Length: 267
Image 1: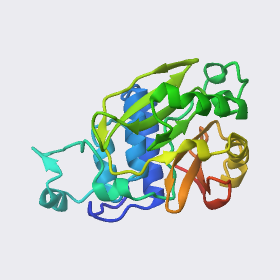
Image 2 (image 1 turned 60 degrees about the vertical axis):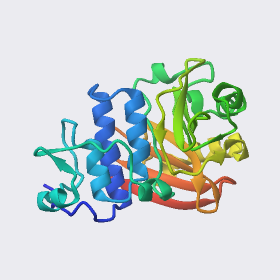
Image 3 (image 1 turned 135 degrees about the vertical axis):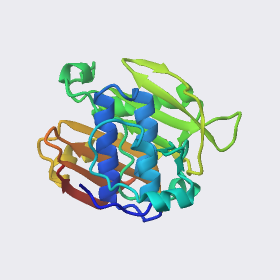
């Protein structure tokens, strides 16, 4: 069993990977809806501390490799309520303000290839044509040419944009099976929006194609990527994983220059 840690301890990329794996399993078990899963994944990949991460998974059943928290310290910082862990509604300002180089990985793609196949072929919405079509149509569909995050999967894409009626609050649109849905209920954020038109679909598709080998997950069954603001402009993070528990992340600037690769992590 992992050693208990104080909730204020800074989270590592490996900790974020463990939390995302737990959320993926909860999605598979129907404990979370796809929308809930996407929201929690976004928060997990930008979480600053172990306490932020645990708050996102402690209402879920199942195994996790994330470190448990020391109860005495939990009580001191007020995370425990009535003897049970309370789920934090939003990540802390410190967490969401940081552009963590570890990937805002998003909802995993379905393992059944047939559900991910669209008119764009077996790669679905990860193909260069699909990426181009969706990014081109998005401004009219979501009402903005900038977003806090844009996440692509084989079978869907999500756009988290500013709520025009409530500054500093997000609303999320989903593109699936050729149709747009949303917006979902907004949530507060301190994130920085990024102009997603700056990303070249050809570059994005190339990163997706090379990510399994680069991250050491050569037989990746699940691949997704997120567009977001980085420390020096637009940033893309590609997440890979397989059914054996191997996971990795490739991070690059908007021009495709790779800035970081997290090697395979097995569970």
